[in-house]
Image (cartoon, rainbow, N blue to C red; front, side, top):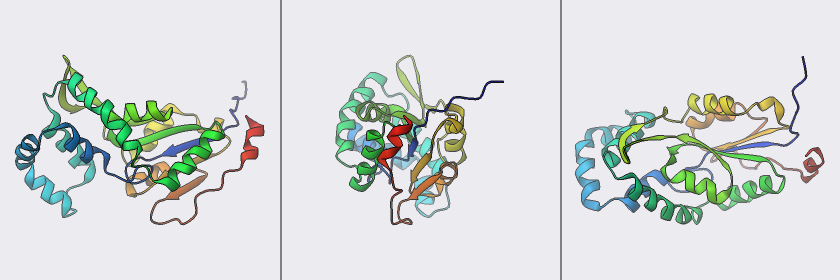
Length: 216
């Protein structure tokens, strides 16, 4: 048996909404891409669930797919993707500067960086292309150039974050694993890390030493 080779670089896992980005990117995209008339019409149809969500009696991982289906079912994929590409640069202006500076430190160390988000691929793919990082997120279904309104993967939150990370990355190959989140939906992801940071709870970001470059 041959020992696995190590990369001797770090792996940095960033949640997006509320962590690297200060905004609720999905709600923002709804208002960016859709008409107010459509939003109101569709929101009325799922109003009981919206109210239950804001009363904390309907979970976010159930609300997100219901909201996506209500807003984007039967939408033309090419048109929505064009709007998503335009939306992505705006989101880059909404990054939390403290977390973004930490992100850039990982970049300078040539670490592998992944955005791990429950938000949808529609615009996050463009964000990650601009940032030149990898992406694990909730993926949406397109059939015959139209959004079906369904997800093609489970909602990428809670244990799904941990599962998807472990499916894609061999953590034993990394020097250290860093994870950054802001909610209970990130706890399973943070449990994988050697160094973790929870927005609103932790005061100091993990120290990154540039001498890790010697391992590269």
